[in-house]
Length: 478
Image 1 (cartoon, rainbow, N blue to C red):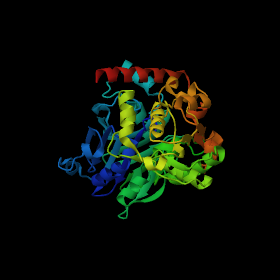
Image 2: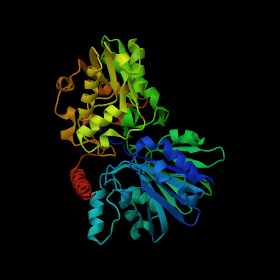
Image 3: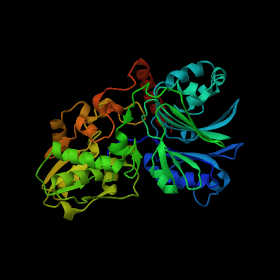
Image 4: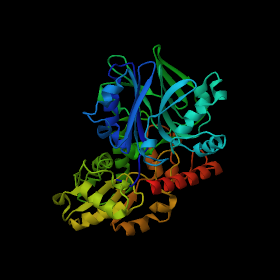
């Protein structure tokens, strides 16, 4: 698994007496999208209550704590977080709740706003006080601005000011509103329970967790309102104005295999990627093994296309935390060994093809290869189900800086020698895009092509500089 942080997962439900409990289960199903903090906000139609905490969902909402019972209301939103902007502290946990002149609001955000630092500078210069260090809080400051509240559609007006990636849930006392940025970087889907309650989630696997049926995706540039009148839709950016830029990494790594993302099943896409890898980078071998979990579907596809048997050479422990969160490389290496146990009988004296979803820094991958050699693998052939990552992401994926990305400064052959594998093959960018159902120009490929849908301007450069300064400061503080 790569040394990257996912963004976040959001979940909301309107019109169910068990909304809070179902939000809890929905967040459980989205736990793979964020493990640093979790939170739920709920409304009874007049007031909003909110609880957030550090750690996974089960820890934040312990069964014996009584928190879910205190939050019990018919409307709710929830959030699981990995920090991409702002440090990993309780003050940055979401949903973010505040009260302004038009009443209380709670907000959950998946994505990254590239112009947030500029707005923050402007507001602080005029005396505004911020409670957090993340980019989400600026949305509420924009919404509270009197001149924005005087607009016919205040929320739509505010969203038109934002640049970057955002899938958003707003909980007002009497309604829930969901919105998606004009590029559709991050997924956001609508479902409905058997009792008629509406549900919104980052991934459709959350619908499965509570017995809801998938209805449709929220379109790029769309705001959907859920209230006592039902479901209503409007666009803050006219449809077709902006070409979509869906994040392909949702299919490569982030999303759960059972989810429908951007209209297609994640497992099916990954199997197609594995088949394409086998066509582009064939090799004679005895067994195909995945790096679980995100490499498993691609390994199945590679095995089917090549005719080489599939087996589980690595067994993953689900009780070890994310290794890329460890503070040192030695601890990350130890975490990998604890998380991925080798089945020596599968790989001993074998020519092994290893399928992984990506290589970021390369250090963790090198450790896996070393373990395979120690276990007696005769040959190790590494196949990667995405192209070489050469550039950071500004839209909610916490890739390292360009200097830390191994493919930004080394050729494939140099990477092969560094990893000490017998052969190395990445799927090509055209090959990856051919595995998707939408036109190739409907996806964001910036981390591989350096072609950013929202241009990397001076504004973004300033934001990223300030972001890293703040993260450094916060990490020293904490």
